[in-house]
Image 1: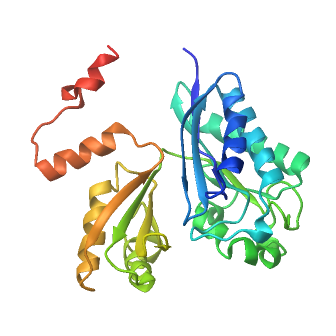
Image 2: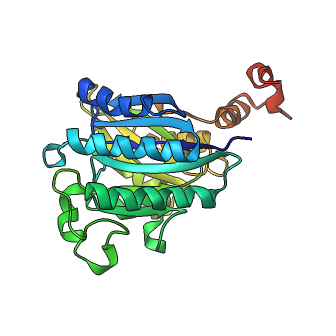
Length: 298
């Protein structure tokens, strides 16, 4: 059977459609790779691409995307609500079929080495590819963001895994790694007070004693004039979407603020949504084979 790996690059442009299309075209033009999805957010000023294919083909598409982003995005002029440190901010490899996490780690290392050498961009390895415990958590690496990295990169403990030991002013730095499928789930609040979103994010994220497999940050959606709790669920089978949703609602009550909506960024595993259906509908002894679409492949 053919090996399949998923890759979900995030790059720091969510407003200029022409630039976004030129970057995504690099994936479309790579043989052996299928573009599954891409979405952009103007407030975050960020785009997320989801692609799948053979390991070497996906690695090549990721490099071409990083290269094109480095040509078209100038981080010295970038502004956006989402934390970021590079033109291509993060590139995770995710094992899908007949491929191990260890093989995805090697893909991350090979890509990181090439990006550092050929594009002169500092590269950090994270999650399962991390070279030190403090580099496993993306938020820990990215702390200080693009603006703060010009000084942070000079610290011995933050020497890049690949590439130059100084910040690339135009392209910033890039984080590459291997991980379990992640769900980007954002909850919108009925308030324009960003401090409330920040307070809720602090309560639910693991680093502050919240949900074990949740990362969260408060974000302002200026176009809609509402605050948002932006959440990454890094192990959805252990910290479910509904768990994060209910905790945000519970914390929002103390401020008299309602939850007015939610969104999933990129693709989501079917099991994650079935888990939500089981919880909210209180379905007993439900099996994924009872979902019509899950049987069609047979």
